[in-house]
Image 1 (cartoon, rainbow, N blue to C red):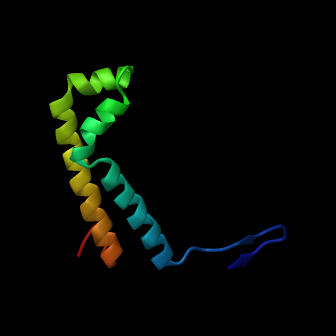
Image 2 (cartoon, rainbow, N blue to C red):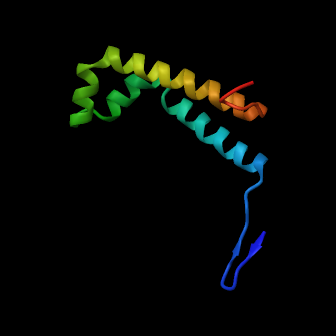
Length: 87
């Protein structure tokens, strides 16, 4: 804890930071799950984003699958306490 004249700055602990990153990546994995692409297309119907998604549905499913797997694996590794850049 660093005390200043006007305010107090606190540093996050490593477990709290790890938990926050794990939750954020888990939420990203939940959003990018490939089974949610049809729901997203339905929610965005009538918009330019919905038209783009409908025109490139297969590519969107592949992109969401890759993002889902990467974010899920990273969230699990961080939650277990392992570093992403090495063992």
